[in-house]
Amino acid sequence: MSQANPIRLFVTHLWAPADDYLRVFEYLESSRNFFYQNFSVPERRPAGDREAERQALRAQINPVEVVVALSSLFEQDQDLLTFQLLFAKASQKPVVLLKPFGSGTAVPKSLAELADEVIDWDERALVDSIRRQGRHEDTTRWDTIEFKLD
Image 1 (cartoon, rainbow, N blue to C red):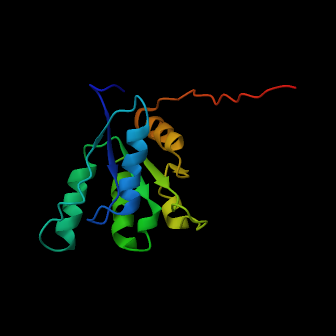
Image 2 (image 1 turned 90 degrees about the vertical axis):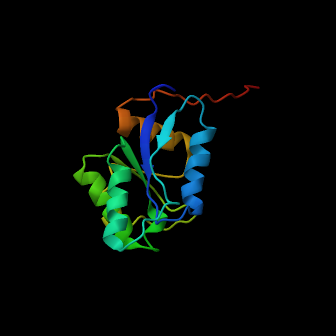
């Protein structure tokens, strides 16, 4: 992955940029040497019925390498979120599922079963799982802990 070859990703949405949707990009932007291209376009809700929305979502998901799913959207529109994940799986796109932000709420079992990886809200975990699922890159990052012996 490089600036010339960014990871193509889609972040689930319900046709409006929610707080969690925007938070994903804050996390990705704060990561060094991580280049991505966002294919999700929540601002452009298609005119028409539910099928028109689904067709637009298919067009957004088709070119991507990995789908980042927001489990917090499940309560707002279970059907539309489930559709996005089912289409991703049918298109053989890996799914990284983010647990609900800031709450101890469990991820619904039906969502967890559609995910390749379920992660907490952590910038490093998010970037590493996108690399692992999208490009099969194993990030061998280590934490360094400094301590002083008396």
